[in-house]
Amino acid sequence: MDLVAAFLTILFVMDPLGNVPVFLSELKDVPEARRPRVIMRELLFALVILFLFLVAGAWFLDLLKLKQESISIAGAIILFLIALRMIFPQPKFNTEEQNPEDGEPFLVPLATPCVAGPSTMAVTMLFVHEDPSRTLEIGLALFGAWLVSAVILMSSPLMLRLLRRRGLMATERLMGMLLVIIAVQMFFDGISGFLAPVV
Figure 1 (tube, helix red, strand yellow):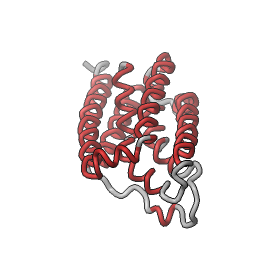
Figure 2 (cartoon, rainbow, N blue to C red; figure 1 turned 90 degrees about the vertical axis):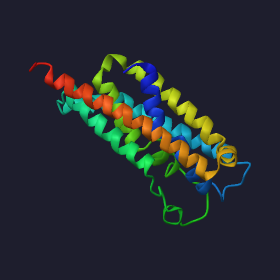
Figure 3 (cartoon, helix red, strand yellow; figure 1 turned 30 degrees about the horizontal axis):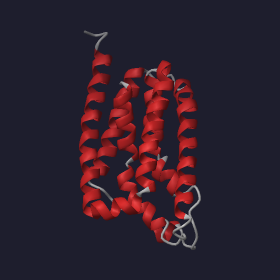
């Protein structure tokens, strides 16, 4: 997978447009002047978490002695399930249960699992495990996807005004459809690699 494909895949999995309503809901009790600082702090937390998984995740998978074909097929299944959730979305959080007390969020739920969610961590680990020599390239793709997500989330009030909730949902579903295509391609790549020695 080249740099652009890795960047787009990670960006779609991060799903910044789907996170816009969550960010707005979680920050409604935070003073408006402080919201940009809170969002940036949470985004930086997420970036640190994701890079920890980028560096140490592949090493952990190596301990399990997994084959590259298995990783590719597993990654395809994960991406496919993520895409289904984007196409047929469910409520991500009940904010009354997450934050019963007033105040600004800290680490949870904005940094993780909104931005640095289990899906993004898993996909990042799988990409690096497929080809450890491209760790730097995957790192650049991860940073680029995070940067785009940061721009979108920092301008979340404007995004909501421009697209409205229906527009955000439509865009998220379109991203989900593209992710299905990527997942299917990864699946067939894994199957081809598995069957190559037999053929």
